[in-house]
Amino acid sequence: MHTLSVKTPRRECFVDITREVARAVEGTDAVLCTVFVPHTTAGVTINENADPDVAADLLAHLAELVPRNGRYRHAEGNSDAHVKATLVGSSVQVPVAGGRLVLGTWQGIYLAEFDGPRTRKVHVVAHHG
Ligand code: ZN
Image (cartoon, rainbow, N blue to C red):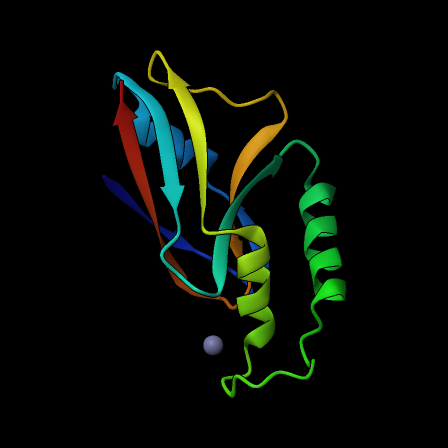
């Protein structure tokens, strides 16, 4: 298992970690890769990384769906971040062939930060056939 350390620059942002994940499986005979985020206010998702407006739209619409100051019980003040993390999910799996991630042309892997800025861990587990 590889563990990446990812700095997130703002409270809410998507950080493209495709290259770092690719490096973790490079030169291996892995057939599948799991990317797991061990946090409760951040997640991981796959979406378009060609046009940065897509990530901006995702963040803006998640913010509309889950208001920062909604009626929450959790007293830490970051309930919206917990809800968004659950919506996005804490892991993704990507096929691997010839030591390379098998992603679609427009796909990238994003760490989805909802309560930054912080340094987050991302575990990359390579599965062998
Ligand atoms: Zn909390």
